[in-house]
Each structure stands twice: as structure tokens, then as C-alpha cells.
Amino acid sequence: MGNAFVSDDPDETRSANGVQAVERVVRALEILAQEGSAAVGDMAERMGVHKSTASRILGALETHGFVQQSSRRGKYQLGVGLLRIASSIPRRLSLVHAARPVLEDLAQQYGETVNLAVRRDVYAVNVDQAMGSANLASFDWIGSLTPLHSTSSGKVFLAYLHASDREELLRRAELTAFTPHTLTRAELMKELPDIVRRGYASTRGELEEGLNAIAAPVFGHMGDVIGAVSLSGPAFRFDPATDPGIVTAVIRAGEEITELMGGPASQDRSQEAGR
Image: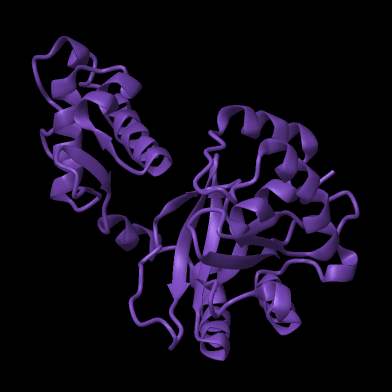
């Protein structure tokens, strides 16, 4: 990045130290990963630096494709350049690589959208997607930060958290009512134990009117939930509540990815999950 971080600003008097410059870059990326997008002024406030300093950091990251300006003028979001780094992760350790064939098979079987998500603090982040043949117009969910309380994948992550971790997370999350069907906190807490018991979560128009979804957990080798696989579609043609086969298929997809990631078989999972 050359001299992108060298300036006469008071905030940067200590930036000759390369470690501090790196820490600022990492902090900027973490903020954008959490917020989805942010203006320069907001970034500067969160990072504790002058606006000009934040602008230079974002400019350098943009030059390398690590961030990009969103459609909303003046706001930045993570860029596709990060994929170059992510692709260097050994394939045998890549959740996305392991899950891809399973996602494609599920999308082909039902013709609907299949997403793979991981949890990022108070959000579920979609890291891969497979489109089914029934989708006339596709929406790219990859990289999208979606709320935990109103998405099927998000409910999975909440359900399998330990109670103390869940309470701490929900204190920081905004449980926005996106539609009249979005669950209240009390309704959500009542549903979470059932999700663990049955092995899947579902939503019916809770994030978007007319959009239904179902998700199952993916377990890692330590027995913790490392991801969620979901199947979603418009309510007029996709309703897991009336098609038990959909439930079985999604749960099986989660189990297949779990097996590929070295996770435990369903009968070996801790009975304490989600308590």
C-alpha cells in the first residue's frame, strides 16, 4: 500500500509504526463486515481517527479491491478483492468448498434458492448460494448481513448458542419487526428450544412478506454450529409446513456438510446444545 497511510495529521503521528497502520486496516474491514456499509465519517468515529485518515485508509483498500463504494453515495462496503485472499484457504478446510455440491443438489431438487450462512456477531452472513431452476429473477445474497431473529439461518445460530451467550448477543441486537409476521422476543425465545429438538428452523414471511425459508445447522469437528444451510422460496409455491420432504432434505443437507467438515454424527451430538 506504499505511503497511503503517511500524512501530517495529528492522528497519524504514531503511524510510522507499521503495526498501528495494519491494526487500522483490520479495524476498518471488521467495521464494514459488521455494518454492511458505512460512510467515511462514521468509519472515522468508530475507528477513533480523523476523517481524512479514515478516507486515506478506505482509498488504499479500494485501490486493491478490498472495499468498494456502494450504490449509496459516499458509503463503503467490502469488495470482491477479499475473495482472492479467502480463496487461498486450504480447500480441505473451506466450508464453502465442502458444501458447494450439497447446495447445488438441493437447489436442483427443489428449484429454489439455497444459501450457506455463517454467524458474524449479531448477523448471519451468506457465504455461498445456489440458484434453482424456478427462479426467474435471482437476488445475490452472498455477503449479505441478515438479522438473526427473522431468518431461518439466524434462528439456527441463536438456538444452538449457550443461554448466557445468547442473552448477551440479544442485548446488543436490534430485533426489528420487518413484517407483521416477525417474531417478538418472547415468541422467539419460546421457539428456540423447539428448533434444537427438531433440528431445523423456519420462517414464514418474517423478513420479507411472501418469503418462506427453512434452515438446518452444520456442525464442525468440535461439535459446535459453524454454519447453516437454508432453502427459501416464495410462499405461493414454497411451504415446508405442507411438505415434510423439504424438511427432511434440508436436515439431510446439513448432515452431509457436517460429515464433510468432520463434524459428529447426529446421535453423537451433545444433549446440552442450545441450553
